[in-house]
Amino acid sequence: MLLLLLSLISALWCYVEALKFALPVWRWTLVGFLFGPFCFPLLWTHQQLNLKRYQGFNDSKLKA
Image 1 (cartoon, rainbow, N blue to C red):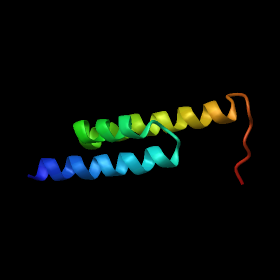
Image 2: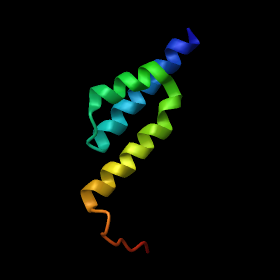
Image 3: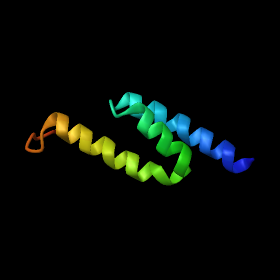
Image 4: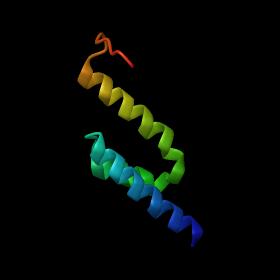
């Protein structure tokens, strides 16, 4: 029961994060449901790659 609840929460979290970063929503929802919290580092990596792809790898960004 606890494992199912954890999988549902992870799937919902991955769904929201995929929407925020324009990633494939249903793919990340399914990954979140199947792998639970183990998919979070992979999702964060894909978010950063998607952001870099959008901004360009040679684009400089000032942090103030």
